[in-house]
Length: 220
Image (cartoon, rainbow, N blue to C red; front, side, top):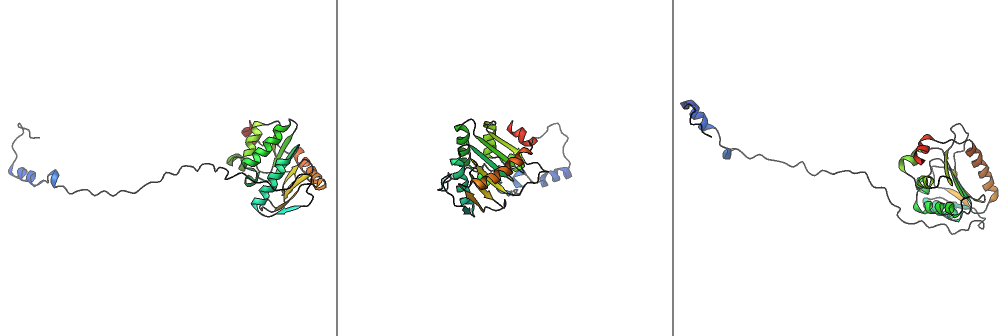
């Protein structure tokens, strides 16, 4: 804008004004896009890929020990035992074995047992509860819904417990994994003698077990 009341420009000021580039004469500014950005949201919890198929053995009838060495067979035997339980289930585990028990089919089998009779029970002894609490576990959810029938406790740190994972069913059947870091183990669908030995081991550990503060807060 030109101010009519402004003093006239000198010759040198007029020349400087003429030498200044106009807006149209300015060089274009190059702009380079930094590219696309990815938004990393936390992954959703993976849903069960499919319903599991139980092993084709009958509780109380199959006397031959069934050995297994892989995840698929371990799940099949565990599910067969859980589905056929009539009175009680006892799980003795280092960390709740999410790969084995954290599945809708396992949860459904345990739920059916507990709802079939108010005296039916599921008791779970864990060496470490932190993984199940932080990662979530279907049987933890079941314990919150049916606290009188489903109880979870932690092994006493001073109790000389054996490094082993096992499942006991109705005092007559069991599934054992001697090495918790491996899938391999065996299932017995009718072996009261072995079941009684493991049941005694479970009861001794249960009587000295403790209620973990984190677990108690989660279940309330």
